[in-house]
Every structure is written in structure tokens, then in C-alpha cells.
Figure 1 (cartoon, rainbow, N blue to C red):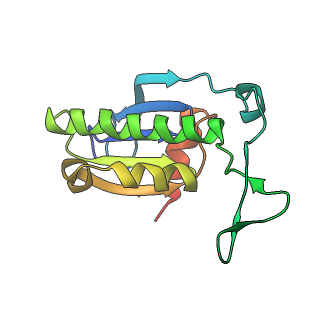
Figure 2: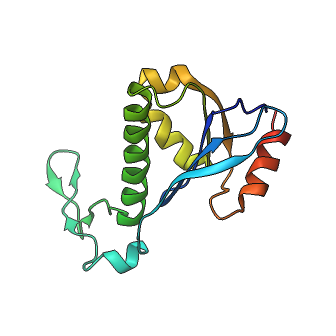
Figure 3: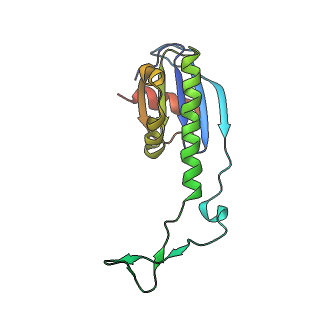
Length: 152
């Protein structure tokens, strides 16, 4: 994938964000860090204090089943990752509306990428040059550049 000069590359997962700008050209990218962010997000078990609630479940004519069932459990860790992705999309919206970038490339794991897509503003979508469904948040910038140039 060619990365135009001054294009913004976002590398994100559910708790880390790298905002890079290409100071090189399309053939020889030179990604520079403009912004880095990391959110503390302990595991779901560390965030919970109680077990899921219990409820009587109805059966047929309104009677209650013996023993009832459990209420749906919230995964607080995943909820925070989804919120982080929504916040990332909001930041991109603001930058797009401020004309901070003309071209954008997003690199994120499949689940984060899906959550980001739910929140793309039209201005962000219009500037989106491509997406790469990979988790590269813990990789050096040289590896990110290689992954992008190797992508179709």
C-alpha cells in the first residue's frame, strides 16, 4: 500500500493508540509519532466485584422455571476497549473536521477495527485510504512501515 506524504496512520487496539504521520513519500515511508496514548484496562475479573445476578425465567404461561437463570454478564474489559475505540473515532472526526489530514490509514485488530467502523464520521470515511486488520500496537515503527508497504 502506498502511503502518501503527510498521510496519517493510526495504529490502535482497545487500549493503545499511535498516531503517525508520513514524512516520507509513497515509496519510502518515514512514519513519525505525532501522538501516543495508552489506557489502563485491567482484566474483566479484576474490575468485577460480584457474580452475575440471578433472575427467575418465565416459561410458557407465565410460570417461573425452577432455579431461574443468570442475568447477562457485562465484560467490563471489553466495554472499556469498545469505549476507547469510540473515543479514537471521535478524535479522528475532530481532526478531519479541522482539516488536519487529507488521507488516513487505520491499522487495528479485527474486533477494534469493527468497533471503529461503527463510529466513523463521513469526513473520516471520505479520507480513509485503507485499513489493515492486524495488531501492530506493540511493534516498532519500522515493522509498521514494512507491513503497510507489503499490504495490497
